[in-house]
Length: 170
Image (cartoon, rainbow, N blue to C red; front, top):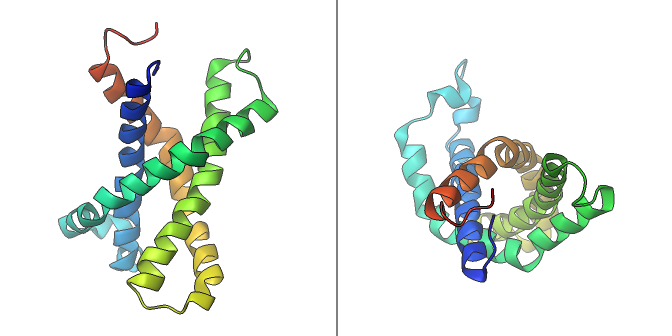
């Protein structure tokens, strides 16, 4: 895994965008009403969802990277260290760190998205922000948790391993 500052930045950017894009696809699909489609739900999505998500992911990925660098990763590590040590099963430690990071990053990114998409771009009154934010966390947390656990982390490790194949830990 990353050893140098440069490797940590590369790993962080890959992880940030591997979380941001699917979360954008998920939220755009909901905004376009695919979750409410009779019978098929998300299975009736069109390519337009993926294109619309691309319009937002460039800046949302940067926000994810900034938040995770500033506090998300540190708090995720503190969470893991509260329940286990790095001497415990490495897989269990990694899962606990991921869970702690998602528990911090989902509310953080939900607040950012609430402000950007609902208040600034959507025109909702600021006094509604706590309710909007709560709804956003409720909607996004299951997707963020399971996507992080079973998709983004494995994808990030795979891509990182391809980039730094000679420098990867054994």
